[in-house]
Image (tube, rainbow, N blue to C red; front, side, top):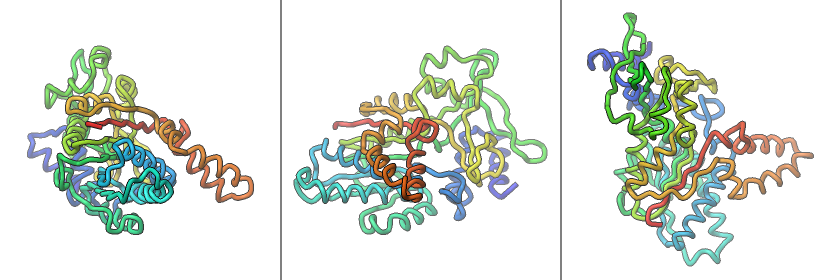
Length: 374
């Protein structure tokens, strides 16, 4: 039982013996000093607990860069354009995206009516990750990226014109855990055993509005014992993104699916996944603050919440389809030609295909584009 375990245990005692799983997850991941994403030793990548698509191969960031460039064209090639990335991880996406943006600007002058002041903003709550991002993007991003801890702190909030981008942000927001018990939805809370270890107890919902996050088909089809994960925080974040924009797009890339499929999948599995040293487990109460905790995103919920604040759904697709639309297969073809005589090209090709193939990230990750006034 580490220090964070004891701090959360004290919080449970102070709250009368239980807290919601969302409160537990918020502390485990985002405690200012001891939470997973704020620890100095927090590791992401091949030597860490998990990796994200931008870390697999630069082609991912290049394809996203082409999408951003296309959206800039769709908006009329404005001379001032904001690209805001929420939760930038190691900074790999910013580095590769900016490289592709610069290449397109240099090689397609006909599309450019003049110099473009691309404003790259990163919103990152973790000081540790902000340092990592500055290091990773130091070459392409030097003097071009500004950092802020929250979205509301960004100068121009409410009048931004451009794109708000996130990759694997929503899956790490705090989630509530619900269960169907004797014909009604109850909530699974975190409590303490006599020895101080964490346990779960079922009790009435902490907020009677939680079932409203589900569409009607799910609510009517639940069976005894079905388990769900819901994140009101996701609705709050998508609304804040809409509020930040005057005109532009929200581009969300994450694990998950549309409803009802995303909930039927979690109903039998419990919905929560944990990663430690590249190993998957389903116990969020071990290695508190030392392992990642995540859940699949309900993209239908993001669409519904966004629609209420002016975000119109433009496109929803798998990551495979998204990459294919922006030249991914051309790069694959080039590497296939080289792989017969160059083992390094073959190794690079295998990494790239992890991003694309259905059994890799190709189907697991989805891409949602929403627009506001554009």
